[in-house]
Length: 225
Image (cartoon, rainbow, N blue to C red; front, side):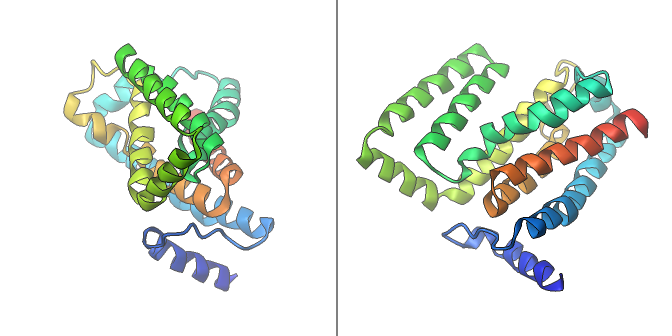
């Protein structure tokens, strides 16, 4: 067990310095232990503590929260089952590049851009269409894949940022000063980092599982604690 912790610690220290993705080589029991153990606990600690810190410093953030889930049943169906799978497909599936993954994720991101405005949504759909057509040609596919791998750290952080900002839709932004927009989504930004690492290291389904587990604990805290 100590060896597993040591290997994971060493991996995290140099995660953004490798040109190739280093998959975890252990079995599924070891993956489950790491994802639902250390990764989940650390994610929960930073995510939930940052949330309570934010609403203590800026009570208006909690007042502006307009998350539509009102019952634990809705929380389980939407927040624990549907949202983790959809959001991981949208934001993390294509962190390991392929034509199909890129098209699926980019298309869903384009649709989600309508949250900001119709113009943003239409622009993103147009960009997706351009890339989807370009990827049909092998030369373009190889070029984009090479660019993606060369700039994978930038891509990672852009996805983290977009994942956080899309959650502004959970709030009544007329109540929140513009300079608090970024701090408001700090918990989601933290979650995006851990989910991205788990997706790259362990695989897509493990990121979904981490996401679902995080939401489950958060909803238990919301409804029962």
